[in-house]
Image (cartoon, rainbow, N blue to C red):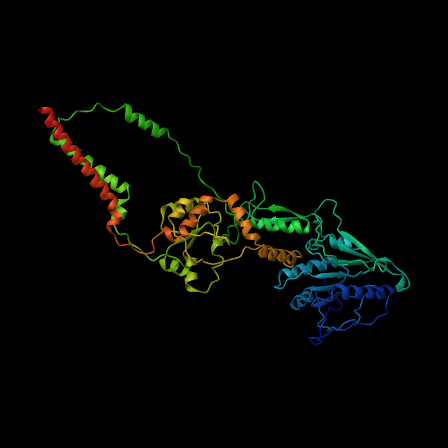
Length: 537
């Protein structure tokens, strides 16, 4: 849509110099005079706090409105296209728009396109003026962009007349409480007529009461943050549910049942990683059959000659095998030998110097490190490998690798399918984290929900609700054995900080058993000799 006239930025403070632009005088129509008075009332009451107002028009309307000098303003620029106009408005962070065009719905589409390509974001207030006598609000508010904006106001000519006092305008806003694809959706809500309803609120706060609006909440199965089945729950979900309790809305979960997706070299992806795991099971049939076979199919034993050399040889080896088996089963070898100790890996720099490969189930674990400028962090990104869950389980059993875990604010670890409580007891948890990152809820640019949601987040932080939700969700959806194993792994008493010199106290138990067994054998041997002599007498 080309602009044949001019576009003007009316700044509320005299801070910019005039570039170019002009206001073309013409004979005022009664509608234009009444419209000027209405626009003055709306802008002075509801747009007084915005950084600047943007007037967008293409000449030719029979009810053309020219801004009256009701406040200090600066004419910044005129432009030849809507895209150029809107780029200026975003550069100056203008949050108010007065639009009088023959195709206002096309202006909304151009505004959405400009916002998606610009760094600035805001939730604007838009006032649409009538181009002629036709009612245009339903067509305007049925556009997809109107589905995401809460402060849209349209002025329509309800009754025309020869004088400004005979003019009656209908004030209409968009139905923000329903999606445009809702059956029997009514796009427009009539707020009142002017000048009869002077006490009406032309820009009502629609977020304070969403009137049961259904909001789609995109998430993934990632306990304890989000749990999709058997109920929609989790610490992040509870925040969104609290938002809906305050502002009268309802949530619908949207998920593709995958993680963060997978990006291929050809710039395409699958929007998720499919987790496949081999179904493993155990059966005792083989063990039972072997046991029965050994018991029933034993050949008759051949008795050795009592006191033969062969019998003594086998007896000696049986004693040696029993002794060695007892020693190694009792972990005596680990006590009688001094292990080799290496400095513990307690920091990202130490992890980098060790050269150990660390793993996780997705490349998303290193997204926060990829833009780092420190050499050791860049090296950690190169040492990272992403594997499927079944491969991670195999690597965790093999040992010699590091595994990424996420520890939340209250100290709980999130769901890790490849690590069990027993495996974590054999691992060392670093004392310093690789990086910290807040859990975020992402809205679209300029979302009208963002301000209320941020206010609620601060209230929940002050009340400590996040820690409570984390604890409840962890107890309900995560393994308590995993949390206990993590605490034991982090405790100082779980592992030695330095090598310990071997002392007699470390092996006295084995020697006590040896002395007791030897003494008992000698005593029994002497008793047998004495008893044998008595029998012969």
